[in-house]
Length: 301
Image (cartoon, rainbow, N blue to C red):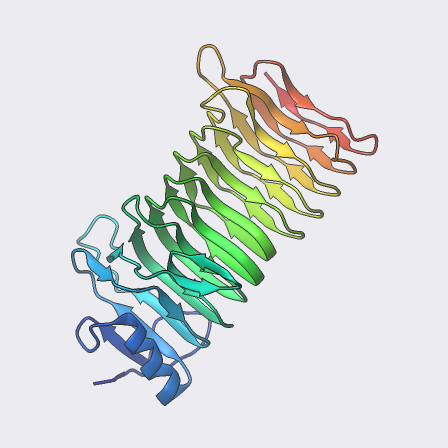
């Protein structure tokens, strides 16, 4: 049965059709296929149930949005989806084990928590004009959020555990607010023209944020106690024409384990390192090698 509503949830695109899982469809992919075939898109509303299991990767299609039904009586209000993605899917000649796979345009997901239970590689793969808001991804082996192309937006992500919390491999992605913690590297940027703003990156074993590519913006982030293994940095720049502005890099351990708060590699140049706050480091707060890099108004303690 399809639920028709005159005022559907405030999402980026106006849709009038919604189906509810698990009431109307036991399987999220079946609900997606129904909406695409019958209505060219709509909403899959996931009720809060304990340990709703994904038995195969969710393939999110054009015009479909997955949204958790918010329950304010529960502290976080998010439906918990346990990833059980077997078998793995093949994409771009690679075999991956991904909980939510975005393979089309203008799709999104909100108010969902996904738990990989330490067994599955990736939480959410974004590949082309995807919108993610208030999604918590925990206990995946490799990446919590993985951008593979297109123009994407990630608002208020939460990640705990894994190798890299947010990996912007290709495409252009805007990431705002949220936090990542307890991973090897908090955020890795390999493509161009991305924005990472107002995130807390906490307790990484290696670098807090790694930036390559060009014309990326890393601004107003709080990097707290990176380099848990020692010998790493808060923000590593292997990039050109990037803006590193108004970030706080803090290591309050005694002694600090962070070698540098901000560090340029020999490939870096023409960057703007402005207005950052650096506290606690072993070697130097800001290390610059680029002859055309601008360094100004940073507070070093």
